[in-house]
Image 1 (cartoon, chains in turn cyan, purple):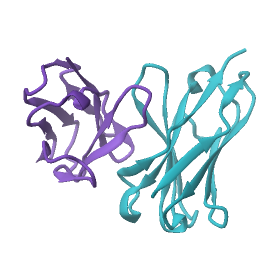
Image 2 (cartoon, chains in turn yellow, cyan):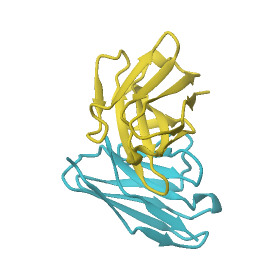
Image 3 (cartoon, one colour):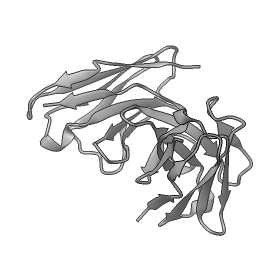
Image 4 (cartoon, chains in turn orange, cyan):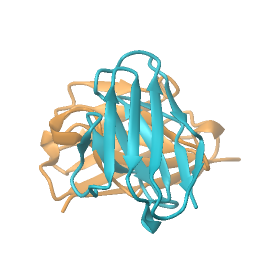
Length: 120
Length: 102
């Protein structure tokens, strides 16, 4: 069955960096676009970034552009999110999600999320 | 940029009742709209894609309709496990959500 498992979250000081990982299994990872979506405590969903199946296309929300980098390693079935210059407003649960049927949108499978807390 | 508005913000109903949730887009999105359900402490779950197609595993009591700018998610008869927050989505934009509670 499809599984997405995020890791790498934790408490980090403002201005520092963190890298999240998402290990995928149960499907041909290299055939699917992948996303990061976040949810601040008690708030709604915010799309963060998208990467195409072959890494040729990457898109970012304006709120993270220039600070976050999405990447993937298809040989390891793993998605990454490098987060630099972190701010308090980046505090959220970060989910990885799969684009449905090879399309970019919508998202048919989600991981359980990893919590990132940006605080001094 | 497309803005999605959901109404009502909260819907208070009883098991067995019909729930009707609305999502309105600031400009036409054709039928490129999805609905998700999220329960506390869980990841969102895709219910409906392309406005009216049930995702794998979505019970038949859930139905979606609409096109252009106005969309509806209907739960024909609420069950206990349906009390949750529901989000609509158009590509990279999510609506603010509707909470369905008892």
